[in-house]
Length: 150
Ligand code: ASC
Image (cartoon, rainbow, N blue to C red; front, side, top):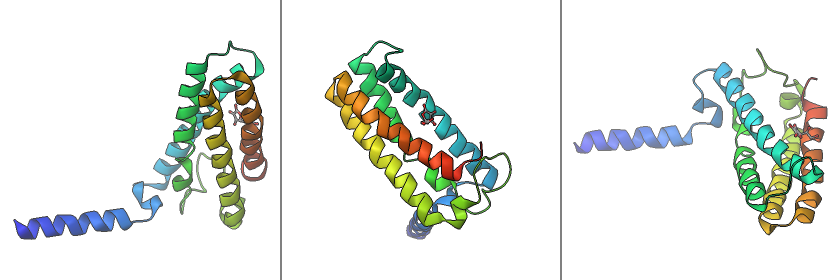
């Protein structure tokens, strides 16, 4: 029993120490995962954009809920850009891996803007949402311009 437990905890320690890309069985799984996370993120970000631009009525509760989803999703795609995930059904540009420091900087910037957007959405007023939405959208676009094929 003791032996099994120590083997189990050793296995768990190894699992936790594995690099992020090893969380995916195959590179294609990582590509699918990151695309799915962007898709869901864009859906909720778009709902915030609709409120920020007046295309949808402002609803403080909905804004806070959508921003929370975006903030959670914004953490996810980065672990799915591991080795071998530059191929297949992806618009990811080779620059992601060639200029990885620049890519990291762009992804950090986006997450920082999304954190601000989430705080603003929780403030419960439309002006705060509008103010935070524009730089958040710009941070999405900046990354797409450099690192995504059209
Ligand atoms: C969106 C969406 C993006 C960003 C980007 C901002 O609503 O899906 O990827 O905003 O277009 O310029």
